[in-house]
Amino acid sequence: MKVADLITWFEEWANPAWCEGWDNCGWQIEPGVLPEKARVLVCLTPTLAVMQEAKASSANLIFAHHPLIFHPLKSLRSGSEIAEIARLAFTHNIAIYSAHTNFDQVQDGTADVLAQILELKQVTPIIPTQPGLGYGRVGMLEPLMTLQELLTTIHTRLTPPHLILSPNADLQQIISRVAVLGGSGASFIPEVAKTGAEAYLTSDCKFHQFQESRDCGLILIDAGHYATERPACDRLVQKFQSLNLDWVKLSQKDEDFRQFFP
Image (tube, rainbow, N blue to C red):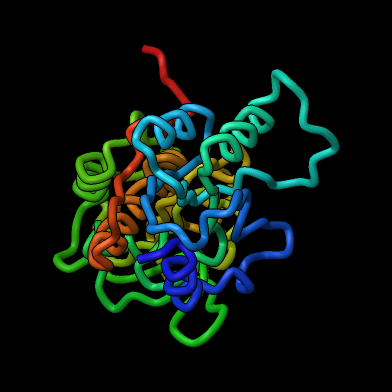
C-alpha cells in the first residue's frame, strides 16, 4: 500500500477536519513520499529519537498521535530539535503525520481503547461530537470491582510508573461505572460527574482538579499521559498490519517524559 492510500484509508476513519481549532492534525512534514510503499513507524510523540529510529529502520512515515508542530514556527535554527527533525525528514525522505483530537473521538481511538482494556460494557462517549463518536468513554464494570481491584487492574494493564487518586478514597468502595479519557482530561470533570461515573481515569490532573473531583463525588485517577495514550498507538499498529503494509512497527524510542523518585 502506498503512503497516499494509507492516509486516505485513515482519514475516512478519523477525519482531520474533526480536530479542535487549537490542534494541528494531518501532515506535519511531507517530503514527497506519497507515491512510495508505506513503511510506517507508529509513535505517541515525534521526537528526535523517534526520527533517528525511523532513519535506522528505513521507515518513510512516522505516524504520531501528538503533533510535531502545535504553534506557527518563527524560525528553524541549528540546535533546535524541531529543526533537526525537519532536516532529517527532508534529507532521508521521512514524512510525519499526526492524528490527535480526531483520533481521540473515533472507535478504537485513544478513549475507546482504554474502555476496552478495562472491559467496560454499555460504553458511550462522555462528550458526544457526532453519532456514536466523541471525547472520552463511560461504561459499566461487569463484574463490579472494589476501588482497590480497579486500581490493581489499571496498574497491571497500563503499567504506569505511578497512580494518583482522590484523597480519602475508600479502597473498598464498590465501583460499577467508570469514565476514561486518554491524555489530559481533567477539564472534563464536570461532564464526567453528570454521567454517574464513580471513578474517572485520565491524566495530567492539577491539585485543585482533585479538589473539584472530590467535591463532585468523583474518584479521580491519574495514570499519566503516556500510560493512557500509548495503548492506542499499539492498537493502531495492529490495524495497519491488517492492511498488509510493506512494514509497520511500534516505536521503541517513544518516551514517558516523567520519572518518579524513588
